[in-house]
Image (cartoon, rainbow, N blue to C red):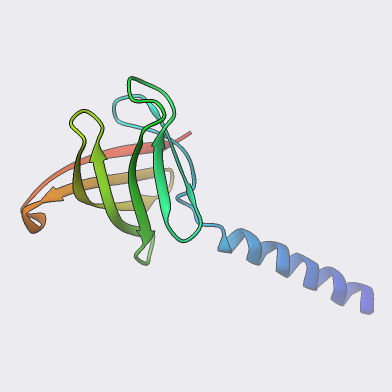
Length: 113
C-alpha cells in the first residue's frame, strides 16, 4: 500500500512540475525566419539567436494570465521600443508592439521550433 501511495505522489509531483513550467520558454522562429530564444523566470527576455541581429535582446515579457504576456518589444532595425504583448496558442505566438496607447500596432506570428 505504501509503495502505491509513494508512486502516486511521485507521479503527481512530476506532473505538477511540468504544469508549472511556463509554455512561452524556448526557441521560436520569427516571421522573418530568424530564431529567437525566450527564457527567464519571473520576466522572460527575448534574444535573437540567428540573423542580422543575432545576440540582441529585443524584449521582455511578464505573464498576464491565460497564455497572455505583456511588456516591451524593441525593433532591432531601429532600436525603438514599443509596448508589447504576446498571446500563446498551441505552437504559435502572436506578438504585437504598439505606440500611442495601443492606437497603432504591428503584429506578427512566431512558431515554436
